[in-house]
Length: 335
Image 1: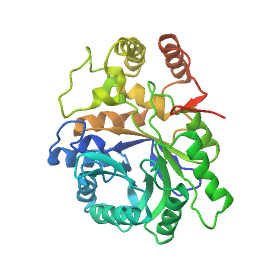
Image 2: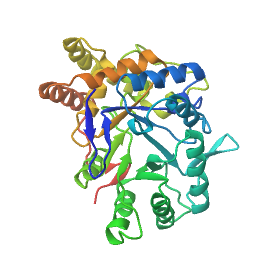
Image 3: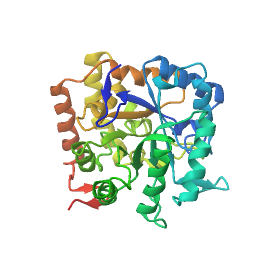
């Protein structure tokens, strides 16, 4: 497994991390607890040392799973990231709440469920339009000073909001904590955040991306547009499972498959490495529901694509999908 040192932190993490959203029993179909525990244990045994979660992933379910897996393991050997600001109201609707009282309650709940004294990286899961960013950052700065977490991150921020968050610390470093990480969706198929990722890296902000396999479509296992069960929302979240995008994905997968054969590796590892080898990516998160899935994904960290292969993939993308519009990030035009 390859590891990278995050800028301005003491964290050295595996280039492949595991995200626990697929274990939440929300959106991705049902999972058994024993399978989730076996998958998390396999991830750690394969050299993955970063686990990402959130309270809304199964209303605390995945945080509790992590606590079970950590029993008997050295806490210092594992980087745990979780989030605040997004919860399910009565278990159904997702709601934003980044008021100080809500953030304090949420981090205490996470610490209890994770059975830990601290969180390595604490993310704002999603902006709350009803709470000024300065108010949220002030309470997060207080919580960091109290030792509740080590590093601060933001997720689902557009470029303008990220810039505003970063400037809070720049202008008043004694009042507001710095942004240490962003967590954008980023893959070979989902490149809207590319400019923001590069800008973040330039300013010393770590990029912990998610969605490198785009719901599994970049594993090559779907030969026809799938029909997901009612409790599996991938078809709504990822727009590549329907035509005409599905056929375009298949054309791109033909290129990935040729490269995979040259390395005697599954095609999904090619997609993971394409993300992991971007110089602005610190860690790419992958989801898994079984030990076999995470073992296969983790093995991507044991080899690398050549520069010629990276170029061939980029050229194929442009040929099939068109050039990446680097002026846009999450729908927000670059200034």
